[in-house]
Image (cartoon, rainbow over the protein chains, first blue to last red):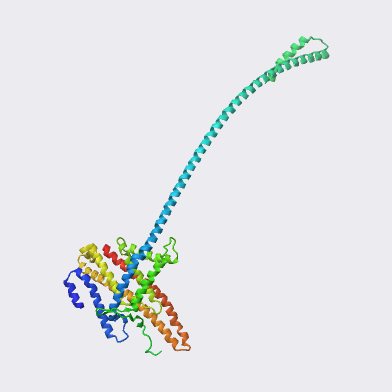
Length: 212
Length: 252
């Protein structure tokens, strides 16, 4: 059987070869199995008892076929749907969360913009108020300065007058004192006008020094 | 226990007809092997239906594990087959679940492991192989045969490389089926050997009862290992199917 297959393989095309090959493999196992089963006495490997093979293949095909139908038609679609549902649900929730997050970010940006403009308004207002206050203060200060300057001027004038008066009085006193001193020391009687003349001259002489 | 009555470690693989049937001269009895195929489908089907009955938005433990299995296979198909793999997902999923539950159920004492039957694993592998080859032929037509010519190879080497590629292509169903079959056969035989050893030593009575503890402990460790192998081999069979499908759809 194997030899015949071998010559066949050489003669025929590759495609034919592919389908035959499984038969060849099968044939080899069958013949060797028979040989082994035959050569071994009673306790041979039960796997090589060819008489059980048709039933095993028959039931394998039927049961695997049933199993395939159960898995392909019921089990895998069921698990697939559950997994797909979960995935879409998660994606849904994730996109919702992303949307909410974007909205929150937008609200925050708005809020911050509001805050910023309010801060700017407040700064501008403060600046304006400060400028106004400064202006007012300057005005008031100027007025006060003027007033004070007036007052100071009149006070100075008064002071100067008082000084002159005081000086004149001082001259009188000095003239009198000189009069008395001359009278007391020398006994010479001089007139008041004379004494005044002398004192005035002396005061004039001393005044520049005092002024310095 | 006489040596005559001692169970052979391969006795567990025996096919026992439960319902005698025949058709066209073939014996198609419903056997212990068929029963566990049916159980694998029933148990997995019921598991998924019960787990997904409410299809809650926030899954519980059972629904979570059902979804995890689905996502596991879906990821496998997505990353190994890529575009165009979606259509084959139900088949790949059934394949994985069928093998996983079959392997796992087989680890329960007194149960039967149908994946330890070479005819079962080979038929599945051959189905995958033929199916994948047909998919490739329908999709690419004659261009499919460029699959056997490695790109960028020196012209002198091409005839040899084609031979190697063709051989490696046709070895696929053999390696795919033998890997699963041999793992199950070896694992379950080893479990049986250690279990038999523990029973035999303790059967001698007296102090040897303590000695039977050693193979028994080894049996516990091996059972853990077999759980790993059961899951791993289901995964390996499935992912290789994905890779073959990828080759068929995209030709390297």
